[in-house]
Amino acid sequence: MRLAHWDFSKVCDIDPRRDAAGDVVALHPQTRFANVNALPLNKYGNGPFCEFRVPAVADGRGVYAFIVDGELRNVGECDDFVGRLNTGYGTISPRNCFEGGQPTNCRVNNAVFDAANSRKRIELYFYPTAERFKVEEALLVTLRPSWNRKMVGNSRRALNAPRRRNTEVAGSWPEVGNACRDQVLVAARAIVARRGVNSFSAAEVVEYLRAAQTQYADSTIRTHVTSVCCVDAPRNHAVRFDDFSRVGPGEYRIIRS
Image (tube, rainbow, N blue to C red; front, side, top):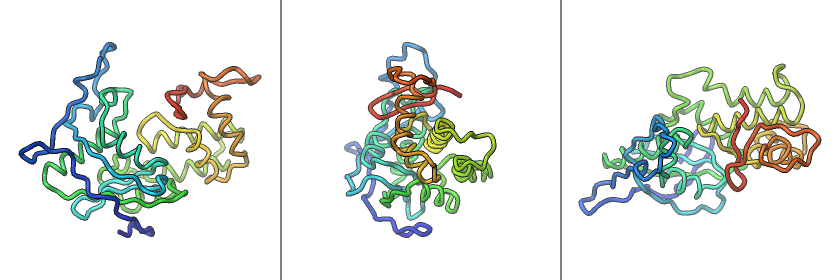
């Protein structure tokens, strides 16, 4: 399937788990969460949700597309296709249903549930590319898929935000300094805004800044993400900033506004 200027290959049909009567099994994982802090559900955390799995692709870094009855509904970038689809969208964890979780996963999974429950055909396509941010942005701006919330409402700010951020990193936006830390912060915020969840990896920051033609080496950028700007890292530098915290193997979140 050709989307804008790129040829996507079909990965599979998505058919969530069904019961003996053929109905999609409705799941409510939020009921299994030990909510000791009395967290409220996020906007999409009530469900119902479904469960599905997709096969691996040869190169898991690129852009995926959900097609429902022949119409593009959602696009997104990923550096691990199987992880993003199976443990992200395909299986909703109890914690992600609450504030501080991952509302984007909840929203897309619920949309898949509704489409499958209405007997619509859901197809998954993939385009492997090292320029996944560029391709995703172009598809969002030109095709405006309905499941991508940041495109709803024809917001001019939302349409232009990714491109503006790359311009900012390049140094033409006067409010952003030219230090490596300044560029890393801009990149992290852009990735988080695009994902809709406060989570990013050092590799994603490196890729974002490389696309923005940063003057800094990949190793310098990684050091800033994992050490200079990370509150959890050993104090190996004369100056250290509490911008990020580590949330898992290779994953970080922003803690400074």
